[in-house]
Each structure stands twice: as structure tokens, then as C-alpha cells.
Image 1 (cartoon, one colour):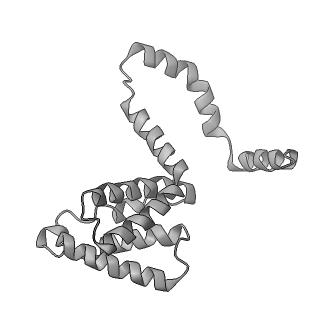
Image 2: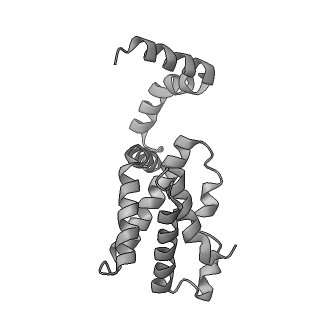
Image 3: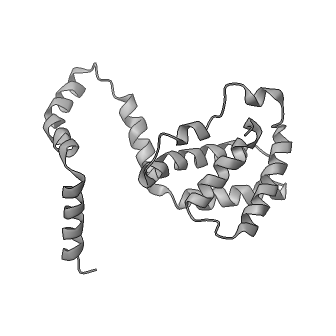
Length: 165
């Protein structure tokens, strides 16, 4: 597969993964729109292959559904940011943007989780106050880490039985 087709692949994976396209006709139309977008961006330029893919390679490490929602929500946001600066008078740009906005609205938890991860990377672990707080939370964090998947599943099923929703 060439780097030229990566954007189509990632966008298709994102949309199919979230069940947005059960209808292959819609996906075929979207593929046509993405082909037009590729022409707008001159994505067949030789420098596109430099450095390899920017999104598809990152998806390999995210294996579970909830994990994928986090990374895919960030990727969708990046596509939307990219399309903000394009000519919205073009029908194919509008259709792609609309589909991406629909997906983004179905991923609000992924965006929050991504923000949480970004906030963690900003913590100044050399700050004495942060260190004190971290030490106070260490036992709780370790407890969360050692909880087995079976105990988590049991807790979930017990809480579902209690709920009279």
C-alpha cells in the first residue's frame, strides 16, 4: 500500500469501526470525496512517502475498543482541524467534514480521556507539591493496578443488578 492511500484507509477504518457506514454506497461516495480531497492537497507529491504514515502506524498499538476510541477521537479532531482551513464551498469537503463531525460527536468520552492523558504529561514531577500529592495517591493507584479483570467484571455485574433503571 502506498502512502497516498493512508488517509483513505484511516478515515475508512475510523468510520467503519464506529458503525457509521453499514452501507457500502455511502462509503463508496466518501471514497470518491476523499479522492477529490487528495487532488486538492496534491497528495500524490513525492514527499508524501517520506517518513512513513502518520496515523495508521499508531493504530497498531491500540488494540481494545475503548483504547481505540481514545486515539481515533484524536485523529478525527486532527482531520477536522486540517479541514477548517480548506475551501468549504466544495461539496466533497463539506460531506467529509459532516461525517467527521458526526463521528466526533459519537466520541466525547475519547476526547476527554485524551485530554486527561495530555494533562498528565504536563505534570511537573520535579515539583515538591506534586510529589507529595503523588505519594499520597500511590497506594490507591497501586490498588487500581492490581485489580483483576475478573473482579472488575464482577463489580460491574453487581452494580447492574442493583440498578433498577
